[in-house]
Amino acid sequence: MIMPATLLSTSLQSLVNRARGRLRYRGGLCVNCLAPNATDGLCQGCREDLPANRWHCHTCALPLPFASAGQRCGECLRNPPPFVRSIAPWRYQFPVDRMISRYKYHGQTAFARPLLRLFCAQLDELMADSPTPDVIIPAPMDGQRQRRRGFNQAEDIAREAGRATGVPVNTDLVLRTRAVNTQRGLSRRERMANLAGVFSARTDIPARVAIVDDVVTTGATTRQLARVLREAGAQEIQVWALARTP
Ligand SMILES: [Zn+2]
Ligand SMILES: [Zn+2]
Image 1 (tube, protein in one colour):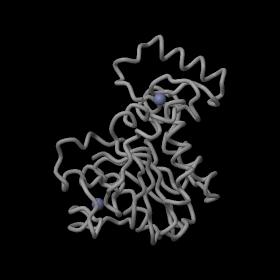
Image 2 (tube, rainbow, N blue to C red):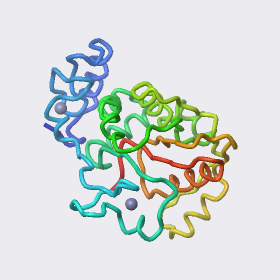
Image 3 (cartoon, rainbow, N blue to C red):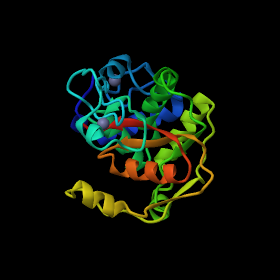
């Protein structure tokens, strides 16, 4: 059972945190509803209730309201992105949004762990119809933000995915040269201008690349990163993320 975030009091949260430390995720409490006997932090009910991104655009993973023959969204048909496909098993909505933001903005790894484990367990199957990438590249964060946060969540996800698939992870192939002002409220053209020059890639990029990020939102940043990687030699780019915004 999933409870609204508001029902989870601070004291209950600290109970989860304490139990987490003691029980090492086996038979511990569910991070969503505090039920006992969770596996990797989620009980069976919450696991089944996660908002699966069942129908989605094959190219950018945008959630679609129903299964359609072509499985491409309008934006990808009008402006094909510089990547061939995206994998994002969940929609960025409750409780996935909360689980990811707890981790990303509060460093509470336990909230993301169930998603990471499930994501990696599904990767082989999800990758079945695509060639295995030569390298996994986490979406880079600008240095100042990473220093403040202490970690890059995309890198954590990339490392888990690398362990699960045996594909090497490389964090040195592309850099983020500066922070980006908010993309909210900007037109497509303005978003692209806002992102110009934000990534810089080395020249020896392998042919097949998987870009890893925690959430794909408008897709503009992912497009820009993929474009830079293509210019630097990548030929076939996939995007792997935990979640996609509807
Ligand atoms: Zn639960
Ligand atoms: Zn699309």
